[in-house]
Image 1 (cartoon, rainbow, N blue to C red):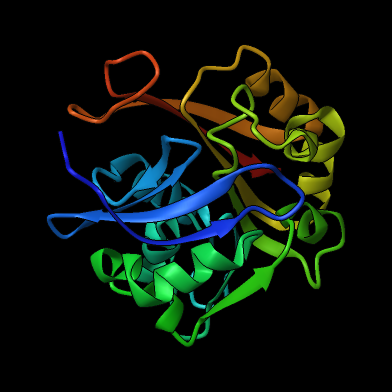
Image 2 (image 1 turned 180 degrees about the horizontal axis):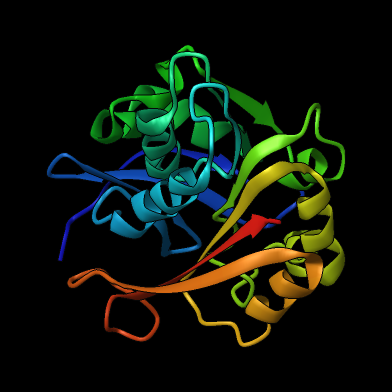
Length: 227
């Protein structure tokens, strides 16, 4: 059991919770209300989410990728490893503390992705950039609230409704990709992607040693390519 030291904390706007940045033996995590929200340990499925999407994109040199949200930064870092020099990655993050902590602390274990000139931060709700994209996205990668069935912020649920998935489809360029990470299975999501017009695929990703709700390291990835 790690003995965490509190490095910093910040009150969550419009909420009763407080987020804490904690550190132990060179490892960082963010805790909220006594529970670990995210940490910089195992991150194979976050890397896989980016790689599965990028594998389908026809032009990585010019790709425009939206990542929601920042988390520890592993998904953004994986996207940047795949993008060409002219690619762009925009990460949407609600909490200023998460961005600040990534720049100052947590980014050390994922090569400080926010320092990359191809990366930019949208301080706000990823839903806004799905509803009204500044230009069509090549890919939209969602790792929000641990997936459709684990919502801690009710507004995020819109992303996984039929309307939200349809608007994600409309926000993508031809052959664009929607990727969704979840700690939980979802019986409806595959059908929702297909009904919206995506060519969907689902991947069960097992990462031994990673704490997950089922206790087996099992996580779920959905990838939908726009026809």
